Length: 80
Image (cartoon, rainbow, N blue to C red):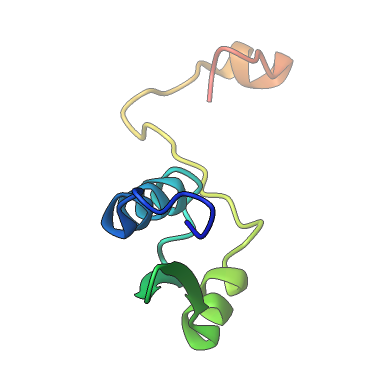
């Protein structure tokens, strides 16, 4: 922004918001304008909540679909 005097600070702010949303950082990082500069502020409490679930996975199963006894014995990958 400093080297481009005609550049609009609001445009840079929108680009920062889009980038943060794309990489799912908008849950704990918020951009703000400080004059002609875009500053990123990290909310440590929100970041800790996000880090708590980092690496956790959810397994979903379809309880209506049942495997036969033969399929259960062979542990066919198509049956869950």
